[in-house]
Length: 379
Image (cartoon, rainbow, N blue to C red; front, side, top):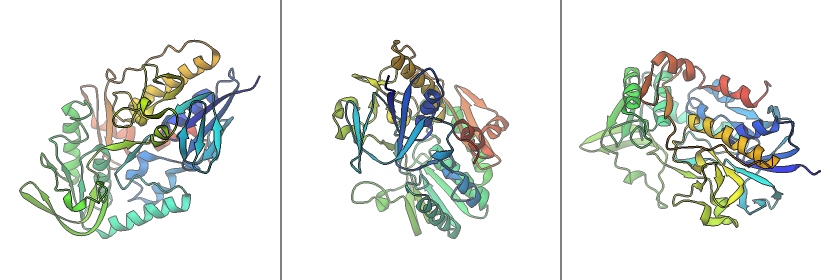
């Protein structure tokens, strides 16, 4: 009997979690393919430390050739369109599938989400950004999301004499208001962050007009002296990081194919059922940041979604009915914000995590030593 063809779009945490779970199930006759824009895995949580620590930066890239999966093929390419039973890459290659998993993630505006698709270019991109950080004395980050806070703390830890300011238009940092987190998340983060010497301005947004490009997006890294208006205040910077929040789903390839707009919500996220199957397409699953699950875009949410997709996929392939469901809105909110290598803060539900627990969980290497062995053998 011919193997069942499973194709996974996206080779980051979401895609690898599903690939690893089904690859190790010897009871299934599978042909598994993971498609990513790169030929290597990038440890996205490490991107906030890479620009200030060149040795750590080298650890944030791992070749797919060292993956723990035994029968999974990895293809470097960009998906151009998805149809009912096949997809097409930008180079014209067609890949057929019996089952598809969409784990393509989102695009972040933050400049430390590096986008290069070759190893040399990726490191060059990090090195160029590091040189800008090194040369600056007054650094301003516009946007108080978790990643910006982590990056601000990394800068201040590596360069304690530099002035580092975060500007957040809401009253709460780390997306506490937008993502359904308790205010305790804000409270737990602010104290150690300001203790590091990071200045945080809340409640009034920066004037973004000087940073806006013709297409409506923002210039994300601005080198040179700027006077930034924040309400009645003026903040000076010689390096401005513009990341005011928000992200766009990587779903253009869905819109371009036969699945089309009907499976996307107004923002372009993939609409899924409670079993994380794409609406109207029982053989296609979606998870992670690209899926419209009513859950925050966090690693904790993904860790709950991946076993459900893997379990339901295996049942579907074996002919049994899918049964596991995911409730994004009802999921207990959890987040840990690393504040450099020696501090962290977090929350679980309505309970603040003690600083030493948050630090132990994430700060030392941003969970790299815990996460990498799940998917990769030691080189």
